[in-house]
Length: 112
Length: 110
Image (cartoon, rainbow over all chains, first blue to last red; front, side, top):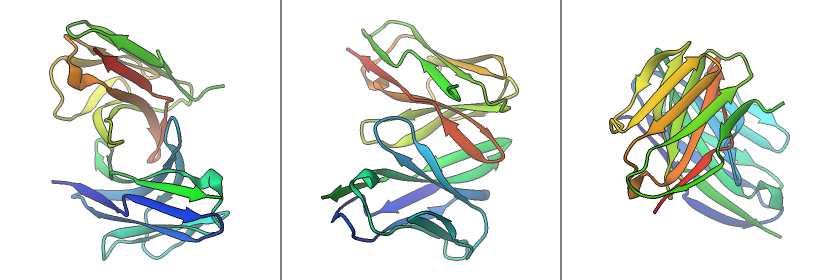
């Protein structure tokens, strides 16, 4: 069965710290890996990764994919209280349309 | 200029009732989805439509029936609601692999 596992499930740090969130996966028809940020409502898109070893960066956030070891990490540097959210990892499979299999999420809390 | 919209945002109803949730996207995408997010925040795909055709149908009770009148709309009808149906239901649309989510409909069955 397809599986996406995120760790840790919960993380509490102080403002200014750097955090690394992990995502490992086992899926049959891998197409892409996506990271989303969910605050109170809808998940909002952060990154989509399709190739190994190429870092994607957006401000203080960055992410990289390892297709050999089947995992991805999401780094956030110089964290701010506004980074507090649930971070969701999803793996896209091609089944006619792209099906996303989500991990259980990492709840990140940034304390001032 | 909302990209993916859902109505209603909140829905409180009693067991046994039938209810519908509507979704519309103005992004011109061909593919739309319904997801269910449970109380532990686990998001799980239910259905996917591509250009009005059902593409993905996960193991979902027959009480759930999606309908796509055109490629910009995907509605979800639920018959004989049960307590376990309480969750947040998200609609999404996609093109080129990236999915855009609607604001969600919080369904509470009492």
